[in-house]
Length: 267
Image 1 (cartoon, rainbow, N blue to C red):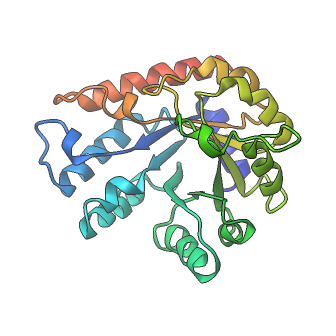
Image 2: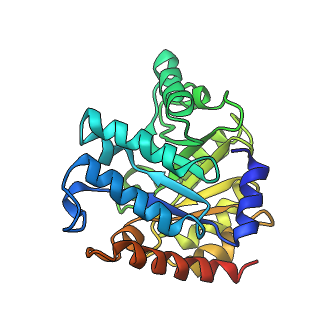
């Protein structure tokens, strides 16, 4: 999906919601089988319930790889079920060089038909550029993540007092464009968004941490929104696990509706 197409979807739906499909067998509603096929049925129900309220889905590869070969088939079948009307992010956090990086890119873009892959940039330029040579495809580069451990490396400052995540944003911006690069910036750091927007005024930001992790949507929007929106707000557990009974999909729809209604106020 190209940038202009993503922006059009956002303004048409008055939503910049991304639903994270962190679908775990152990957390499936009791009436569904605790199997990969149960996960697929769960995913389809979530997509059916939320597709009109969100612009993106983000399956987390760890939950599918843990199920073995059938799990990767469920990932592929989930992507196929979502279809081309939504921006699909493979949350794989890849980041390797040379032919390995190129194979990762071909896997997610050409085999699984995703629109974007999350990428760790700490092996340098040649760990990101393999993902940037595909028309209408994106690398979403980890910049400032929402977990407490982000302080261990991402927030370490150099002699000039510039934290590593800011250096990362500046450097990575020279490798691509706002047409094929996004950054991951956690909602648990709302005070950082003004500074980040100064460094990346036109890039989209994928923002995890709203919902179960306690991030505040209004705080993120205050400094993160741009004329093109420029945000994809991800919510996973707070939506897909809103209820664990037979009406889980209806509960997921209600949670997505709450977020979409809050987002609509910004249009």
